[in-house]
Length: 406
Image (cartoon, rainbow, N blue to C red):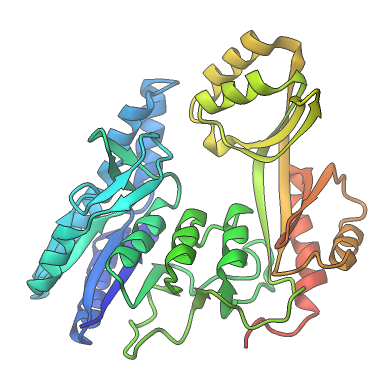
């Protein structure tokens, strides 16, 4: 029997009725002749509520203890879903990330998977059981509980699919695929039938929330097809889903086509003068990841630095700011209230045509910077302007073009 991996997001598990509906869907997949591994997120807003409680207890909770706390949410989901499947007559067993063999590095709150040892999962599949795995978490080589950061359950699912040589990985949520923009911001957004790994990874890193960027990176490395689908859609009866959005090696579009618009809010700009080695070491020590890093070189050493930071990744922002000021004083400056809007597509920068079209669409807005890659063009704008900029770019690049389907 073929192994399939299904991941269910928190909105799909928010309440008893939804958990029972997921259990029935999993049972239908098992009845179709598949061995099934299910990866679950925490139910509803559990993770956010746990984090809020931690911040009420301590303004700067220690990262190891945060991981111990936040990993609880997925354990609740896995146990409840296993119970629901058994109540329907199925055989199921639940595992934490460590029990499932998810081995990570030692970076608490934002760990990365370095190895998967799915021996217990394989044994239970061979015995006929449906295996439920807590997403978002693993265990470090020091046997510490770790979590994988926002969207980490996607990464768990794809990593397991790769380790188990699964036929495919199905990411189920309350939306029926990946859209050309957030439909809540751009009502004319369209579902995209297929995306390349690189396009999806760029969209995720630029702020699209449907799939996690590290998960797509795993899929690319191991050639795993990812199917983003709605939980409400029936499980596939054939060899693979025929609807939703598939993320795979090649996408059926000519190079230079803009496939989507993504955005981020609540960014900070960090500007520094002088030699930047000490500042980079400081940021690394505090595990602060930057975006669009630019440095100058003087005498073979890095001098002057500019980068964007996401407030979402600053878990100890107040203490970090105090330490930054103490160490570097007036040589560093932070600017808040920023956002970024991006257009994504394979080969969109083979000429300057898309850059010019985007700049024209954003005329009248205070564009404070622009950066490009092979798959993305990004404009830095005030946070209050982000949604309008998304609509303008979507209207320019998507709404006037043919549907994004083969």
